[in-house]
Length: 131
Image (cartoon, rainbow, N blue to C red; front, side, top):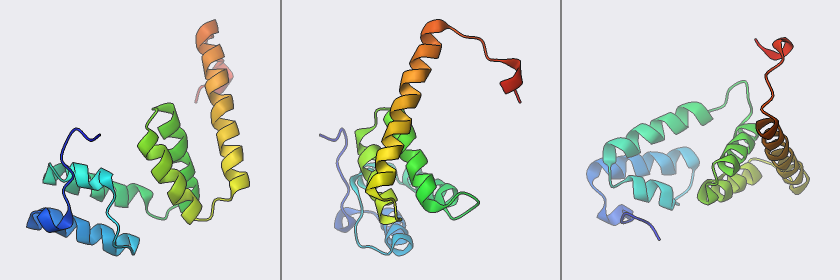
C-alpha cells in the first residue's frame, strides 16, 4: 500500500497535468504508472525526476534496452520490487528476449555471490584494476 495518495490525472493540478501530458507524449501511451502518481504529491520533485529520467534514459552511446537492463540490475541490488518489474517490462518492450532476461538474472546472481565473497574475505583491490 502506498504511503501517499496516488494523484490521478483528473484530480491533478495544472503543473502535474503538464508533466503527465509530457510522459504520455514521450512514451506514446495514455498510461501513467503509480510511481509518477505518487511523486505527484510533490509537483516539483515530479517535474525534476521526469526531466532527469528523460535526460539519462534518452538514446545515447548505450542503447535503450541496455539502459533498462542496467536499471533492472541496480533495482535488484536495491531490492526495489516496483522498479524490477517496471524496468523488466520496459526492457522487454525495447526488445529484450526471455533468453537475454535469463542471462541478465544469471549475471545479477553471480555479481551478488562474488560481491558477497569479496566482502566476506575483505580483499584489497589489485593495483592493476585501479584506474
